[in-house]
Image (cartoon, rainbow, N blue to C red; front, side, top):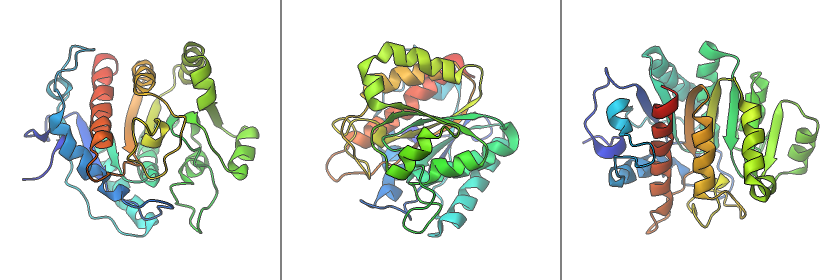
Length: 287
């Protein structure tokens, strides 16, 4: 039986949400294995409570989900992106809300390209430990370390939250202020209420795409990532950010960089719950 989100039977024609597995880690620079992330999320998802006590909703009933079969992606990042872009375009043509399940962060670019053809301009909210602003990395412009640089080249602005490490190249790029606004993790943690107010000002009345790199969370809560970095967001902080963001016009989102750890299912369960919680918030405010 094909794996589906929550493990439930699906009706593609009635579903408003398309969950698209993106099992790719061809440019991984440290710990490989994020290609196994989508399958791990789907395997963990049936263990969720389908009722969300905070919103008092059951998003799978009000929205309807359709999980795409997991594609076999080419190793070449350019060709892999083309294949994923086609799947996102297919979902959009059916009027569905796209959710990509990664996979390394490179896969975000496929969704951005597809959405740009229909909804330009829009802004990106990036939850991440790293800015991903290198021009090239290990010889590739499509590395997971370059995805936000490619997004800026599409004419999209980025608001990043939770960043806590950067190369000198990235730091100098940020200082030049070329469409990339960052809320460093230390700013978020110092005065969370003030940060939320400033974040809402940045995202006011602008359509959004949200990309959630799990290493934006502290590794004590999400250890199963390719490049863990100390000092990250807590679960409650991430949920409050997503709750505020759900009041905007969100065009789609992704969750990336899950690296399943043998014998430790915490991160894939957290990933599945993050997807479902964000959809619950969106069902309440956005759809």
